[in-house]
Length: 189
Image 1 (tube, rainbow, N blue to C red):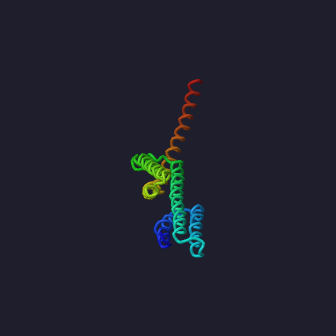
Image 2 (image 1 turned 30 degrees about the vertical axis):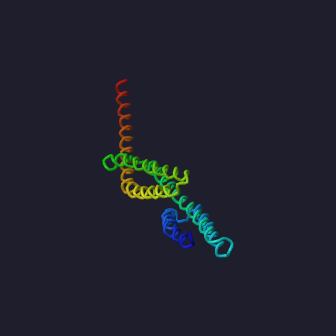
Image 3 (image 1 turned 60 degrees about the horizontal axis):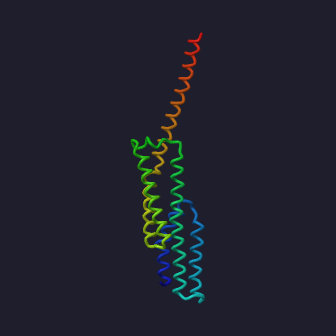
């Protein structure tokens, strides 16, 4: 491995992946910054004659791979946070798309979790090629999920409908209680 390979990996994989994460929070993840700093520190050592090119590039590449894995895990974390917010809304998601929205959402969420678990297992077994393949699939599935389910118009509509249904049921309950009380009062007198 030579220096150009490290820069190619950074440009083609690391930079494109962290740009996605950066766009969400308008900041670079600290975890990735540490790995990028360490990677380029190794490249600096080569240029200052402190390490040979092969060793510097292998270590730099290793740091960039760890950084990329961190990016994928952060994307999964943000996905889980978004799901929790969506499922925690005061909206009856069962009324969206004639009742198909929530079951599809839960099934697609489960698919992402299963694929992420597979990616983590590959990492644990030091099968980095398979881990990266699985993580890229997780990333693609998350992108699809966000397009499909994080549509604020549908969820906003469900929130409004849920509010109106709750309000109507509450008022009906109050009126029923008042009418029942009046009837009981008249019956006892």
